[in-house]
Image 1: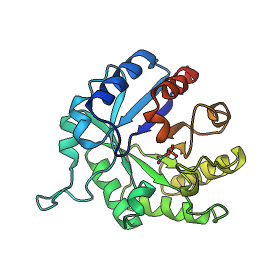
Image 2: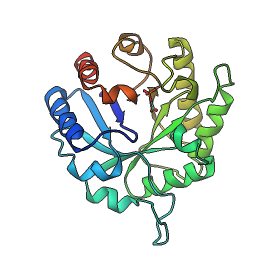
Image 3: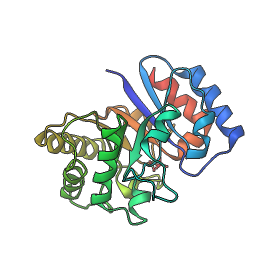
Image 4: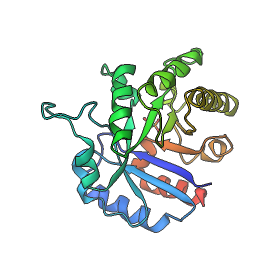
Length: 230
Ligand code: PGA
């Protein structure tokens, strides 16, 4: 099975940086790893990738002509985007609800874009039920289509702290179980403070791939992760 690496660049980088990213990815990408790069929208047209895929960091929840500031699915597809993050905790922190997440998932799936839905509990020690509810609600408006989840405990994002392998595996199996109840067979990635130092531990988990934030900007370390994936 192909393992996945998703790079979420958040609001980082400039054209010079993304041309360096392209060099690294085109050099290290081997066929066994599926790499998905999610730059800010404005850099998407400059991402000429040989073998990696493009993802957006977000997508509009509706398709209409009255959504100032939003980007719709056909616009993304015109520039070769195949994936989109949905419900990242940084979007949820700005007020995105489970209902909006469900609408975004529907928008993506109905336009043949694959949503990478971010779920995760707020605080260390929070119950896994929170994640189950996020999964259930995210899938409430779709009944088929390829769907990927990313288990990203909010407390692990950018903090340098991570759950144990056991905790990650429990969350992954919970997400898969809840999704299968509504008829979806999903892949589950892990994200939250993955870096060059802890990667050898993270690969031992049951995750189908990894969602990388900060380390995506440190190109030498990012390249070392791509090499380790081979
Ligand atoms: P991090 O971010 O790798 O910097 O913790 C992950 C994310 O926000 O998706």
